[in-house]
Length: 263
Image (cartoon, rainbow, N blue to C red):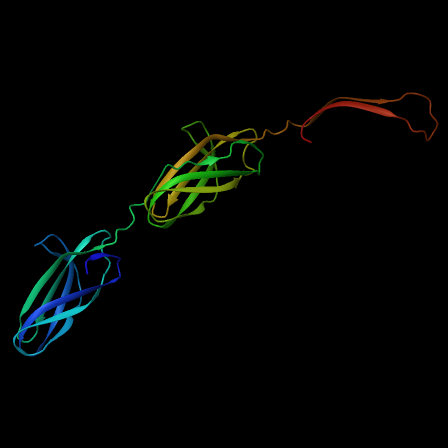
């Protein structure tokens, strides 16, 4: 039956014919191929199917029917079907071709990613802070897995000097026959190895299991909180209230000083 089919489905067929002659055995051989009439390029031939011919003195119309299971064929390709009916004792044969009989269901297009825009929340953060992000993109292609890899670095565009790369995160891409928008969201934790007061850019790479990838950099987006100055004390002035006291008296005092540094 003409139509569009998936690989592995069963396709029904019918084959009427006329026969006259002795009782004998025969076979039906079916092939799938490409090409435009009269050129037939076979790509798959099935094992012959047994056929029994009853004795008949004059032409008689008969018919065959059955199913063929479609093998691994090229997605989107149109195929013709050629069948050869032959006898095996008093040998004779006839061949017929059903041109452009069926098409294999088109597969998804070649995988690709575009318009990947990684956006980390900008600001001044302390070491160990969690930084949220979102990352819209567009994808087309087969359903497959992939990865998102995020790195922190220094430098001014276009120079990016990697200082820390986080473990890559798994991503799932759904099948899409045309460009389809997607969105990633999450967060990453600032490592303690970063330098206080330094501004960092964030670079992200989005890739598929079959090797397609796109990279985007969010420049100068995160600044690490400046460290407090080195601790120090100066101008310490201790003053005790002068006077004459008995043993055991409580003597008041005061002390003034200047300090800088962490709490």
